[in-house]
Image 1: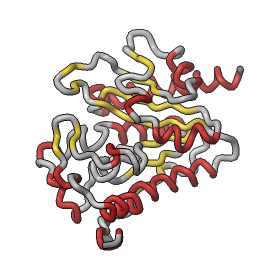
Image 2: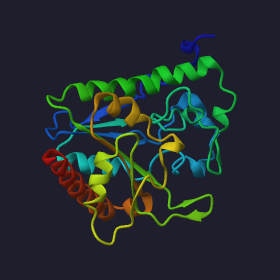
Image 3: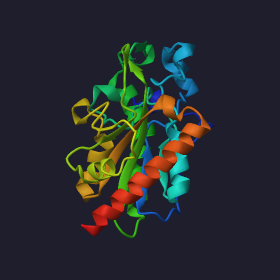
Image 4: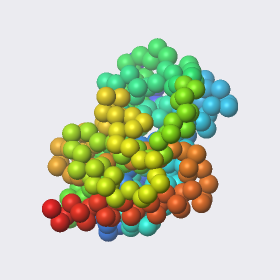
Length: 255
């Protein structure tokens, strides 16, 4: 059986990824890997229970709203996935078990159990490869090397344990931008480096794949999703992150 026999995107499902504000002039490329909870009809909701299909397991709640608001405020292009991370997690390489999660926290994903090589290849070809290519081509359009900034949100409770951190700034081998942003965080905000995840959790794939080989400044931003659950919260963090980013990048340019 070939990957074409497993085709998942229908004719009306649209592209797997899109660029928002492609003509943005800021020296920043925004990326939102977990922007959508959309599961193609061919996959029959992956067997996920109805109450979980719009949960944090399926996407980063508030992530796209925040990323789009930042794109507008910064005038920066934004590459966003249009497919749920339960179908394929675009922040994971095809070799990673988490690329096709069989379970997310306490949520089972029956449609990902026992996938054969052809089924996995179909998802790589239709979801990951187009997203990856779009990030590359968007980066290539910049006349000068941009900073790569990925936007994520995380659930306030994980396996029953509350998370106090409000903003996480994650880095891989290059910590320049993450540390510069931390130095410009506002008073009263519970911000931490490499929290609630770190490189050991395998969450920095996009940074490794697209930023580090090019020598681009980069950071993975994680905002607790209860803080961006409404327009007021999105607006608040848009202003916070815009200020932190612009100040951090100005500091780095001066070095």
